[in-house]
Length: 102
Image 1 (cartoon, helix red, strand yellow):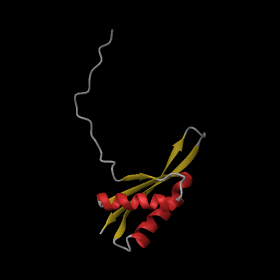
Image 2 (image 1 turned 120 degrees about the horizontal axis):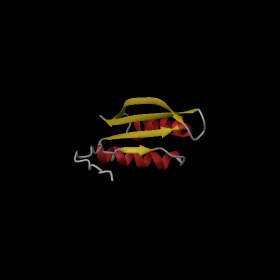
Image 3 (image 1 turned 90 degrees about the vertical axis):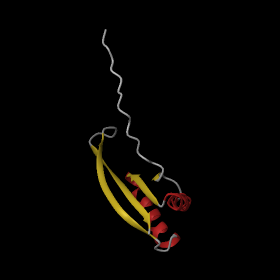
Image 4 (image 1 turned 30 degrees about the vertical axis):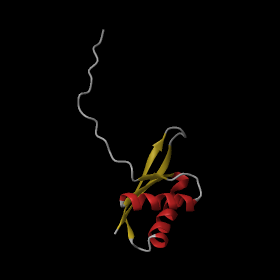
C-alpha cells in the first residue's frame, strides 16, 4: 500500500479580482463592467481568446478614450498563442490587455 504525502506548503493565491474574461456578448455592457472594475481596483486586465480578441480591443478603446477620457492608459498588451488538442493541430490566439488608471 502506497503512502500519500500531503503538501504542507501554502498555496500561492493570485488576486484575480481585476480580471475580466471577454466572451461573445454585447460590447457596451461588457465595457461598463470593465469600467466599474477599473474604478473599484484602479486597474483591469482583459483576457480574450480566438474570435473574442476584436471585442477585447474595442472594449479597451472604449474605456480609455471614451469613458475615462484618457484618465486611464493601456499599461501592457500581451499576445500569445496556444495549441489546442480539441481541434487537432490548431493554434488559438490569446490576448491580455492591462488597463491602469492614471
